[in-house]
Amino acid sequence: MFIMSLYPGKTSDDLKERRFQILYLQVQEWLGNPLPPTDWGFEKHEEGHLRPVTNRSKPAPDRLLEMVSCYCTQGCESKKCSCRRHKMVCSNICRYCAGHGCSNKLREEDEDNVDHADKDLEPIPCTETDVEFSLA
Image 1 (cartoon, rainbow, N blue to C red):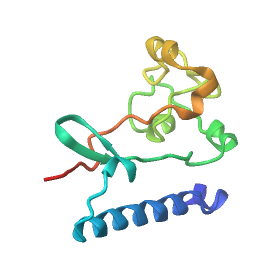
Image 2: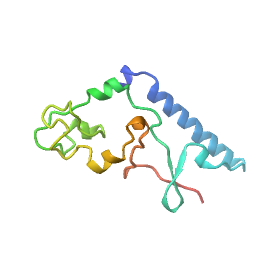
Image 3: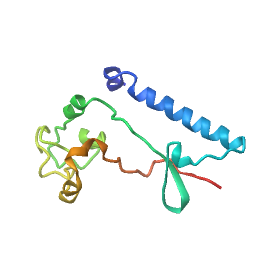
Image 4: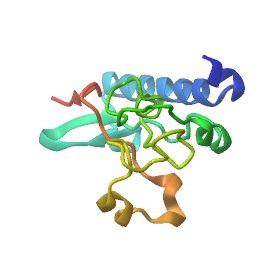
């Protein structure tokens, strides 16, 4: 809630747009005008399942995201690690681990695949809790 008050509108506008996309797509289906879901905010995954595209915009300004750091002294393995809790890797501003020697650091193979010019466009990995849709 606090982050939303620092950066008003961004998250709620994205949710509002998403709600209208889903509603429009569903109404068109009911009217017999099926539209390609991939043109309306869904991505196709294995076995024909569809998942909504999430987080097209950043959850907060870069300046605020850079302030997220942890004070872990034991490897950053649990949800007590504030970086892990916010689904971020530890960085050099973390008090004890400084993004090195902990289990929540950027892996070397991931670092090699990062195009630093387009780092803002990296996809967010899917989790087990993502909602899956399928068309019959």
